[in-house]
Amino acid sequence: MNILVTGATGYIGIRLIPFLINEGHTVICVVRDKLRADKSYAEEKNVIVVEADFLKSATLENIPKKIDVAYYLIHSMSNSSKDFESLEETCAINFKNYLEKTQVEQVIYLSGITNEDKLSKHLRSRKNVEQILASPHYNLTIFKAGIIVGSGSSSFEIIRDLVEKLPFMIAPKWLNTKTQPIAVRDVLGFLHKAVGKRELYNKSFDVFGPEILTYKEMLLQFSKVRGLKRYILTVPLMTPKLSSYWLYFVTSTSYKLATALVDSMGVQIIGKPSAINKILEIHPLTYKEAVELAFEKTEQNGIISSWKDSMVSSGRLRDNLYKYINVPKFGCFKDYKERPVSNVDLTLNKIWSIGGKNGWYYGTILWRIRGYIDKLFGGIGLRRGRTSPTDLDAGDALDFWRVIFADKKQQKLLLYAEMRLPGEAWLEFKIENKTLKQTATFRPRGLWGRLYWYAVLPFHGFIFTGMINKLVKVDAQKTTLTAENMSNM
Image 1: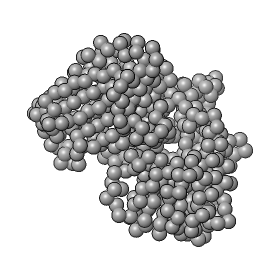
Image 2: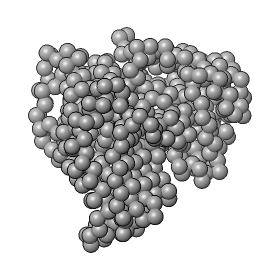
Image 3: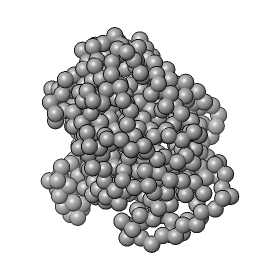
Image 4: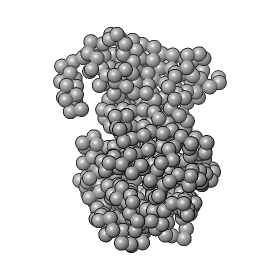
């Protein structure tokens, strides 16, 4: 079958595609930016990457019309637009209008459980999209999921932040809201097993785990899996705004996503039973089993996708990565340094492991302080970290940077700053002729941008000098570690 996957670079899309490939389907991945497409797809004969934006109907003509099944996985929890619901509606209408011109037989949509009378704006939008996608030209299958638990998922990472950082929590009352979490493995099972199942045509199914838990119970079960003793006191005094700030400062989430989550967490998410588990032969994991599985993936560095790498988690970067790949030359301040490299492989591995838990090799405490300042001004700070400790691809989140270009063969890594700045900033590492060239570029915006550059210039002097010296330094312990890392890749 020819299967169209929208949201192909999103948390679910990235994980779903390998299932479809393994089953012998030809997969058409629709992305807004080809740089975001997984590099491994370039070697897959059964994968076609198409660039299109569902907000711009004219771009959809790039999509082939020979389609048997289509997945609609387009949605966001952190879109900052006031017209959030109308934007999602536009995407759904454009998708439907184009699909009706094709030979598609089945459309599969992953939505959210919407059984309550009072819904958050994001759940209202999901429900609206369900109604829009219905069409006499194809058969619609809807799966409505609860909280999705898996390595790299927003709920998993936020709960981990709370549990591992706070021995005692004074928490908002919405922690008593009931929900039915579901493992990402089970969600993927429902999605890929539904292909071509005629008994699922033009039907909607709630999919959920076997337990009804409050968010407080989820936190406590999570702490048991981690072997931690945690105490939680819920109070009725926290307003939604205070709750959002609480999540924002304690966890790695952005303030916009925190606001969306608080809005949704006040709504009870309980699914309606159906025969879907029996039809597709899926036996959903318990919450504890889902968390244990997620940690297995994390410890093996096997996180396939993360909510942090989604472009909607971006603090500032909204357009195509192509726009930022050419670093400007005029009207910019630059800090350029170069050093001879005696061990290219070692230096490249250090560059590809920068940030996250590894830190920035020199002056890491100053990087952390800059992250705290960024948080205070509504930025994303350093807590976002990185998905993999050793691998980087275009589009990945890296602390308060976004990876714009990453190619070890070309020996080049380019980062774009998503911190709060009065301007734009790039950080480039490039090895040429056994010389590491490290360039920090800042394009100021107005007078404040220029004042900012001169204010931080003294710190750049030793931070960037120390960092490049560490990147090219060779010692026996690091060489051994690098050899082991390379043998495991």
